[in-house]
Image (cartoon, rainbow, N blue to C red):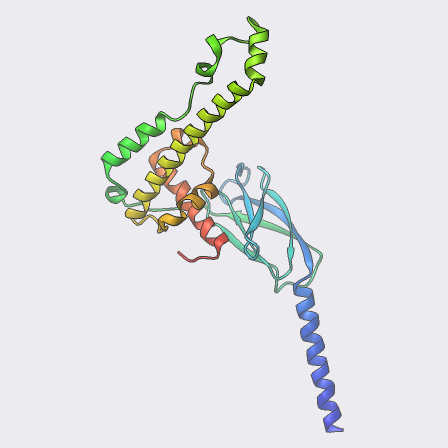
Length: 243
């Protein structure tokens, strides 16, 4: 009798463990709204929701709303530039097919050491080159014609293989310059202990950041540094690294 009771208890424990594991791997939907804790109506134009298990994610809407399908035991990270990120897990919650969340985001405060960020002369040269980024598309056109004054020539330029090749080469050269300038900035940031990144990872990190040329030209030194540091934190989280 005692032996049979022991077997029965063991079977119950195994069944409970299996049922718990099965519920943890079930797909659930998590939706809700993230918002500025001090200004709930403020737009979040680059809201990101990342599944830390898969390293993949989605963009939320500018009003802060989002919806993502995950496993119940997954952890998601909700982040937006200029805010501290939030890790959220519903693993310990009672199982539901859908969870609705409200996520207040705190403003990010980063203290940068003013005099040791990087060499002023290096910075000045880099930013002068950043200001030169871009190319004049009209310079690649024959005589600067337009669709109204010379429609045939205009159409020819728009569709001819030669003109497309010239534009492609100009775009490629400009993009190569942009990437090299970003690498120069990364070298300065690493040397100044803003963050650590091996030189072999620069290209991958630059691809991940996907910094718009317009932002490079318009952002202040501080804003750009905060932006890159924030991207670096997200990059490490999605790669499963510690920094």
